[in-house]
Length: 152
Image 1 (cartoon, helix red, strand yellow):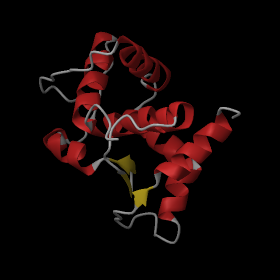
Image 2 (cartoon, one colour):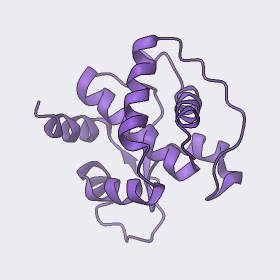
Image 3 (tube, one colour):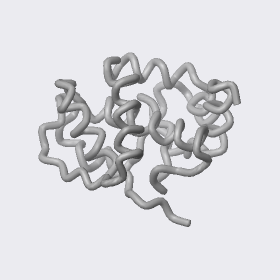
């Protein structure tokens, strides 16, 4: 069964929630917040938030379509208008929790964090640290790793 929301819709909601907290959000930071939102949903609810895959890029997990959408901002905060359509209060609360937990970290801190974790490391195995890659980070590896972190 496909996910109810797209990665773009979840991204828009994360951007809005970040703005409400006065947090600047770059494309790099958005990618990591999307990643953690997806990873913890897979681990705790056994279902994806959205159907797009993450690729193990040099700077960490990325949903290419969402990255391209905000590419023009480069390392600067995203200022584009967004249209959050997540109307499920429980899901908004969940995304709010992800933003509260991870949003206070910088994009670079989040990048470093993902680089220490098994799903990204497994996907990058055998790939030079500075080499580009479009290797997919499997949902199974995300689910397994974050379930273990949650003590499940």
